[in-house]
Length: 299
Image 1: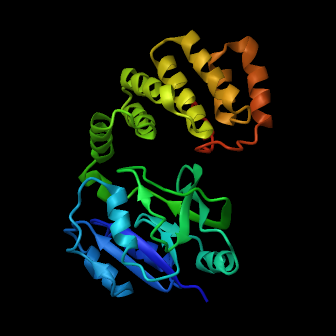
Image 2: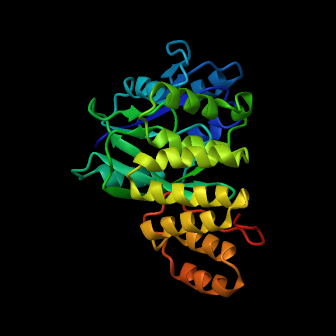
Image 3: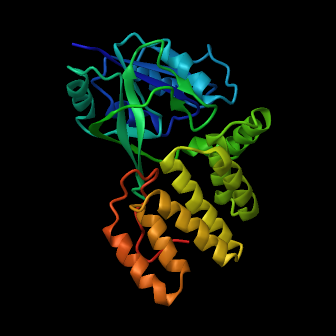
């Protein structure tokens, strides 16, 4: 039977780690690389594994580097990457074992769902322990290979209280990356998102446009155009907002959120028709599937 290693990087996760580790009981080993905890993370980790490494890796504002350090310590045939503020659904390990038992694939997607909003997306989280497979990207990192299949299990993710210790980490790292590598692509998209979280719509517009110049992946481009549409709308540029939203729809006519947003910003004569289209949308190939909250404005 193929063995599974769980690979983790953690820092000050005493409030989340135990729940995560309970959810992955059944894997063959758990490798935890600690990037500098000052709380009781070590006490919790050592209850579940003897492969806890608190002093070997010095944090360098680079998630891919830290994840690759962790997977190099894994001995299993396959690796499951999971974060401390995430949990694998009950029987998830068994579903993973079934998927890898007789496959020629080297990597699988897993659906990731937010514990409160129920927003969902798919990430490559299960992959062969192969030196040719590794993480890239300082933040919002990604594997260097694209899965073709999805394992029918689910990771639920939340928001670790430890994030409050460094709330501007993502913004800081992304600013550094775009400065040092001006030809980067996806980092510009995520930088635009960071500015949108802070309601800095001017900067959101700037970085969406920078991303769109060279962005080529359809789901991400559609999301960028929708984000740009929302930023323009908040800057009271209605015509431009509608044009950008239409670009998102042109990329993916099944993008329900873009169709709903178009309805909200198109006036009463057109709203009903756009919302009718939205009801038929499947959200296939959407980057982030956000569940609409009742009573909340989509803007």
